[in-house]
Image (cartoon, rainbow, N blue to C red; front, top):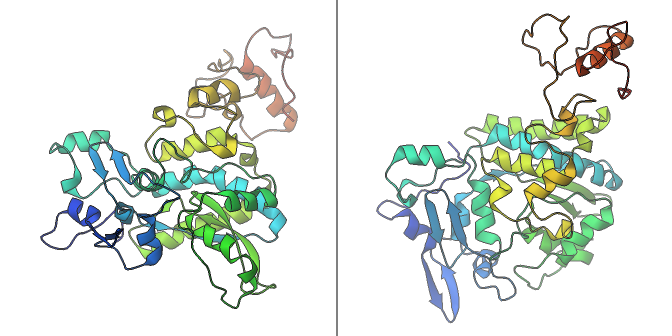
Length: 369
């Protein structure tokens, strides 16, 4: 069995001690219960970057001098190789739009080890918990204090060069010498090394052992681990299928506002950005708060503009008196049956207001095409 958030300490050792225990040797802090990997040990001693190393979720608060609490998180990280490098920007935009829905289907990280909770009331835990704690855990451990710009939901990219620049200018967490490995990408080994700490929930990846094998990929890091191998493979297949089919169909989700896609991502984990100010350097200078997004992006409190019928401005669509009572279909949705002129008349009739001799309101109605 696998969970998106799980650490089992050895018998007789408390979870908090297991996650935070460390020793100092020759001025270097060493995590006691973490693999002897230079990269991970160096994260707790970096001079150029100071992560917060703290977990703050409902009924669970944990601080550490090391990054070991990150071991709570387990995930699926499929890579999708784009057909051509120039396709990266469009596929990346699609990946951001489907991140929220796929996360909503796969949330699997509601509970911490029991002894980490500050209450013995199970009802309080169930009522207040977030369904996806893996994301705030990783953000809380590796983001710096008072900023949320290292681990985050990324902004759209407009060019391949912009995607490369974002990786190159991202603050390095563990600067180190990288020796050549006899590969084609040895010419940019330091750039490849920065991939390891360019933590975005969806991120571009560039590498290749040979010139012919060089490629651009999209790494989808939003999915938590699943209970079985079959479940995990199903999500990998779903992500790959969406990346293949959406561009071919020219699906309109590509036009979804970035702010709405980000809110969908947060809503899928059961939390809201309303509690947090927005600090995304990739979009800095635009809007600073979710309420600002609502005012400027044209998003109504319950449904986005794209979800509303044309000609309706944030109100319930009146049902014409001549139509039978609503029988399960959304009153503002246009049925697919009938010829195009018939469907257009239905759209116009649903808007309401004064009608002409034919019973149709033909003024101030946008052409649905």
